[in-house]
Image (cartoon, rainbow, N blue to C red; front, top):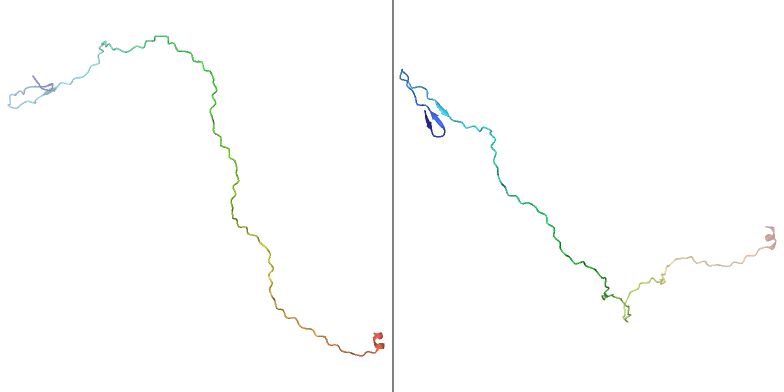
Length: 126
């Protein structure tokens, strides 16, 4: 058997007594991973934190309070009267008598005197 490219093996055809070719058999190799533990050492460089103490001298600060007067502007308004003419309209209601002439007819009574003589005895009987 010869190895074919790609991991295949093939068998050469055989002739039988009758003159016919036999079936050709082709073999394919299959690779399977077999779990096997292989221990390898790998060196990695990892930074390590190292703490070192050192003294740093810092001056101590003292505060002294000092009062400084700063001028502040205050606005004070002063009222000054200025002679000035102002014209204002004032509306007042005043009663003004209105005379209307109304004509009314009144009957005129005229008196007429009549002298009637009456007997004094008849007046007393009543």
